[in-house]
Image (cartoon, rainbow, N blue to C red; front, side, top):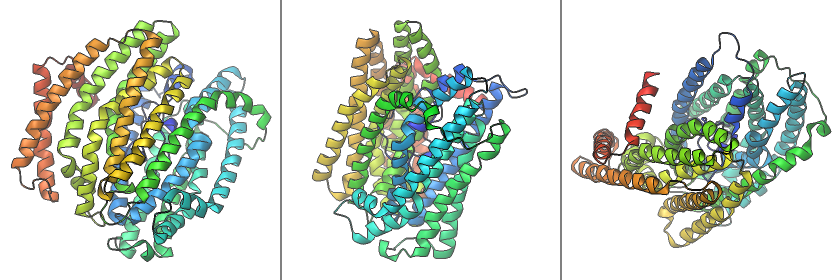
Length: 582
C-alpha cells in the first residue's frame, strides 16, 4: 500500500501481492495472512448493481494498471538518480517502511482485519464505533512515532549505512530520510482506511489509490530531469538541498495523495471518522496476545532486511549493483511470483482452510501438492527467461539516463542468480499458506528463526569473500538459499502435521519440469549466442535477444513439457486462456 520501493506482504491481501507499484525491497519468507479468506467469509451483502464479478474486474484492472505505472515509476527513479544517489534514495525510503512494519504492518491483516470483521458481525452498529476507536488510537501512535523518528533521523541513518560508508553518502541518506520518514504516518493511515473499506465490502479504491502515488513520483522525477537533468555523473556531495527536496518531497507527497485518494471511498461506504479516544475499549490485551507471534516474525524478518541493506550500502557507488539494482531484481521476482504463485495460492487457500476446519487433512495435503506442481510448471519458463536472458531483460527495462549500461549489466548478473530462487520462493509461500489454513502462525514464526539465521549468516559470509561488484548477487544467493531451506523445513513439519504430502508425485512432476526447463535453457543460450550483442548487448540488441530468445524458451519449454507429459502444463495453458478471455 505504500507505493514505495518496499512493502511487506503482511500488509497485502491474498491476491494482492507486492507488485510493480509496491515492490518489495527485500523479499524474505514473508507470511501472507489469511485476510482474504476472512473477507470472503464475512463480507456484508453486496450492494445493488455491484456484483462480486464486477468488483473482481475492477480490482483486476486496478492491479494491472498499478503494476504498469509502478514499473514505470521504479524504472524512472533509476534513470533519474542512477547508482550511488539512487542507492541513497532507496535506503532512505527503506527506513519508514521498516519502522511501519514493526509498528503496524505485520499485525494489520493477521490481527486487526479479523478483529474488525468480528466486531462488525457482533455489534449493533456494524463495528463502526470500534473502528473509530481503533483509527483514533492508531493514528495517534503513528503520529508520535513519525515525529520521534524524524528527530532521530541522523542516528537511524548512521546505524543503517554502517561505519564503512562515505560521509557525504550518509548525509545524503539523512537528507532524504528527513523528508521520507513522515511516510510512516501516511502509510499507516492509508493501510487502516483500506482495512475499513475491505471490511465494508469495498475493494476497488485500495487497488487504484497507489496509482495516484506513482503518478506523483513520476511527475517529481520528470520535473527533476527537466530542472536539473539526470543525476548522472553527480556525487552525493553534489546533491543540493533543492535536488533533495524535489525528489524526496515528491515521494512524500505521493503517499499523501494516495491517502487522500481513499477518503471519498470511505464516505461512500457511510463511514464517518470521529475522534474516539478509548484505548481500553479496543481490547489491547487481546490484540497483544494475537499479535505476539506475528510481531516475533516481523522483528526477525526486519533484522535480515536491515543487515542486507547495511551491507549493500557499503558497496554503493560507481557501477556496482547496490540497493537500487537489488530492488529492481526483487521487483521482477515478486512480479512473477505475484502473477503466478499468488494466483494459485488465492485459489487454494479457501479450499485448504475449509478442509482444515473440517479435519480433512488429506485434502489439505492434496491441495498443497497440487499447488506446488502447478506453480512450478508455470514459473519454470519464467525462471529460465530470467536466467538465460538476464542482461537483455535488465538493459531493456532499466538502462537509460543515469542508469548506465554497466549498471544495467550488473543488474543482469543479480537477476541471473535470482532466477534460481524463484521456485523455492513460491513453494515456501505455498507452505506458509498451508500453515495459515491450519492456524499455524506460531509455527511459521518458529520456522522463520533458523531460516533467518541462515540467511543473515550467508549475507555476512558472502560479503566477506566476494568482490564489491558481486555483493548484490551474493545477497541474492543468500535469499535463494534461505527460500530453499524454508521450503524444506516447512514440508517436513507439514508432513508431521497433516500426514503424507504425496511427495513422490511432486518430485516426479518437478523432475519433468526441470528437464523441460533445461531443454528450454539450452536452446535459449544457443539462440542468444547466435544473435548480435552476445553477453554485453546494447538496447536494440537486447530487445532482439529478449524477443527471439524469449519466444524460443517459451515454445521449447511448452513442447518439452508436453512430450514429457507434464499434466499441469494443460492447466497452466487453460488458466492463461481464461485470464485472456476475461
